[in-house]
Image 1 (tube, rainbow, N blue to C red):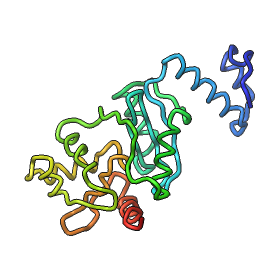
Image 2 (cartoon, helix red, strand yellow):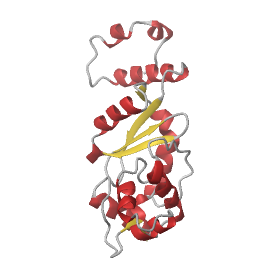
Image 3 (cartoon, one colour):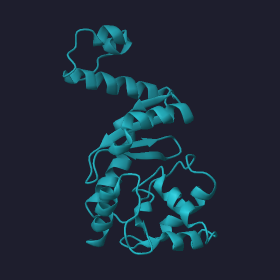
Image 4 (cartoon, rainbow, N blue to C red):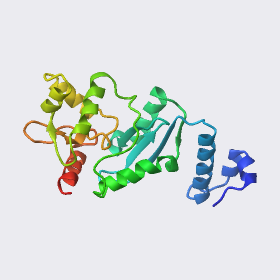
Length: 208
């Protein structure tokens, strides 16, 4: 469906009245108003969801870069609510805005990409957590490092527990590869998306 100039100037309530929730015109209208909001500079955070081997992912981005990647287990609505209160309430679902992110994630999950080239908005990471997460790029695709090794690389060799917390609360999982940090005995350790998701990512990289 295309939205005519007459539709573009109409009251949204009139356009939506009488439409069945399954009507694909709703999606077209949503896309139209999302595009209009983006063009008007009225959106601070755009988001979309996409399917993956570790479940449906929520991806959020600002003009700076990717802000948040969230697993279903976290509750996508709850994540959006937190972003509305901590970043900006001007949040809009705008899938096309996130197409480059979706494309790189798809390439990664197909085994065609080993490093992400996406700009990142790291405002949700601060202090030691940010230091830890910035060191994760040094752990190569298909490799792992222990929490103790990452603590040492981050300049605080005794902060093993803090490294674990930094990884477990990473706002950009998958893209910032905290799944490559494991316990000293080789077991996976905790993960924001759950133990199963972490093992899937480790195995995906190990077999490419």
